[in-house]
Amino acid sequence: MSAIVTQPSLSASLPRPRRRARRRRNWAGLLYVAPALALVLAFFLVPLGMTAWMSLHNWPLIGLPRWIGVANYKALWNDRNFWNALLFTARYTAAATVGLLGVGLLLALLVEKPRRFVGAYRTAFFLPVVIGFASASLLWAWLSNVDSGLFSPLAERLGLTAGRVNILATLGPAFWSVTAMVIWKMAGFYMVILMSGLQAIPPDYTEAARIDGASALQRFRFITMPLVRRPFALALILCVSGSMLAFDQFYIILAGGPQNRTITAVYWIFNQSFVSFRLGYGAALSMVLLAILLVLSVIQLRLLRDREDAR
Image (cartoon, rainbow, N blue to C red; front, side, top):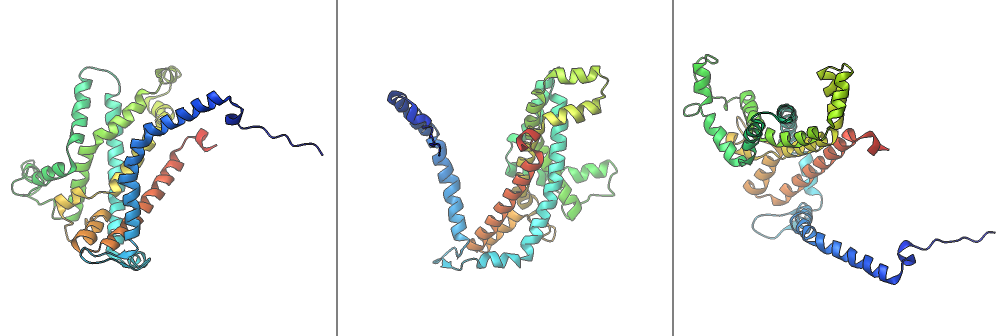
């Protein structure tokens, strides 16, 4: 039998001074990332662990918590209001994602190349992003007011409606009004993400395709979209995650109305936790929503990853 020759590890084969220098570099790198790790631990991992622990208890606002195991998770399966809220959230997420990415991509194509006043256009398109969601929702609620707002009197003067119409009193107009507000506010954010991807495309590719006779639509389909796959994937994940966590706009503008038909998943979690004071049940709902977001993110990453990454 032939003898088995083992290869020494790289660190063992290095001279002692070099091993010490490598250890110093490793410790220095750990010290550099230590503040970020501390923030992640304090503001994500610890609260996540506490939420998971609370979800296994009957946790009242006042009084001692009582261990009930997975009873909260069993109860949510029969919570029709939660599933209705989740279904409404999915509908809103689909509408908001299509609108945000569509408008964001259109704006990115418009301001991608340097031209006259392009800086002013970029600033104007991005400006609503810096407004807080609460402030934007209050502004939109005032604009949508049937008496003192702007939308209803304007529609009446333009002849679009016979008299003033309360657009927040009916589910369809209220839903699309809030969706339009979100698109107005956040489209500039996704414009920046997609614009960075568009600007990274070498101009030689599109120029060569133009010389070969490719139309603008063909260049967009076969050159632009494949090369902005990664920025588009990032924008899609952020858009879906943010839409699934929608709360401020529906709470401030609609307060769950009309007829409690615009309650999102986070809105229902807020209601159960801080209105009904069922903190343990609200924690269980939060953990289920987190699991749904993780699954959606993994699916999106797998569908949008490059072929080279899949190998």
